[in-house]
Length: 348
Image (cartoon, rainbow, N blue to C red; front, top):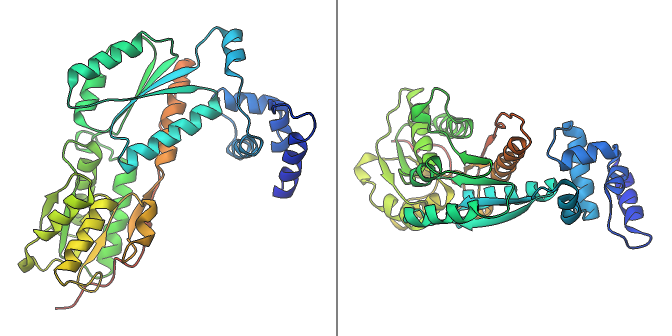
């Protein structure tokens, strides 16, 4: 279906009596059957090509399922409680955006509860309150050891899916997005002649930080290179700045690999303030590809992750659980984005 015909179909669907669009309107614009639209809205599998068409048509028409009618017809709640933390962090915040987008398309409403991981009794109390609500299920998004432990010991009254990254140190198969991402970073830097590496890692209580640290070390070992040091930050630019300030100059570091983009931003400022040129003297890389990464000075070489798809995948897996079906996790991609913060290693 061409984009021109899709636009014409959307225009026709919006014209007329001003009524809200139906799944039949969506099917007409997408060029698929109304059964295909219905299956997607229920969270069931459809062919990728048809899925993209339907999603585009839903967006163009502004389609919103009638949740009240659905509840009356099925006598089932279509509210899902999302338990999360640290939504101010880039990764968790964007994952939550993906959850919201998938929930809307599947016809669910979200109750988002932000938890304080430092207060275990408050977490237990919040879970107890959620269990008393009229909800279909619970999506528990966990980033830290404390949160994973809290969810693991919780007794949920309704089906729950715990969205937590697996700890690579405990399993045989590293998380693909971290291993692939750091492999690409190290391959890129080694290809530019770098052999003297330093790492600024994230907080050790975060599974993603430990996985990225381990992936970095494994990637270097493929070349027979040992890291010349690791400093730990808290994901913030301030912590990256402080970590980079403390790198001993006598180490002759030529490449700094940061666990996320914000810490890389702080590291660039600290290194530049000490008189070093980026990337002439030291190359700096990040991880995540935040929207600002392309506009830093210099623009940041980093790894692009699709956090929104991670959130969508987590919600789809909850929906399959609600429907009594099994599902496998989606494959999250990682893509190196080369920018001006990395360059050839200095000689001498």
